[in-house]
Image (cartoon, rainbow, N blue to C red; front, top):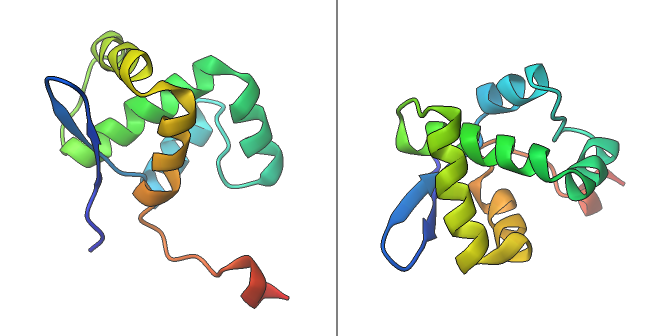
Length: 105
């Protein structure tokens, strides 16, 4: 089993993981991480970014969070890390075996 990615802030650390069931939960919330079009939409919609964090936090920490509480944590992460650093964590948190693009050709 792949370990969760760790998001470190000045005062806390959080486990963040995107499992297949997380992708399904996100799709139910209108967030598509499984297609290129969905990934492009993620970059332009900050609310989708927050939803990804909320569901990835729940999967990583193995407990439910109220949306408002997760969004408060996300605000702290955005203040300390910013969206570019958070975006780099998402692929590290993906707990689904994928085929590299080069191997698909």
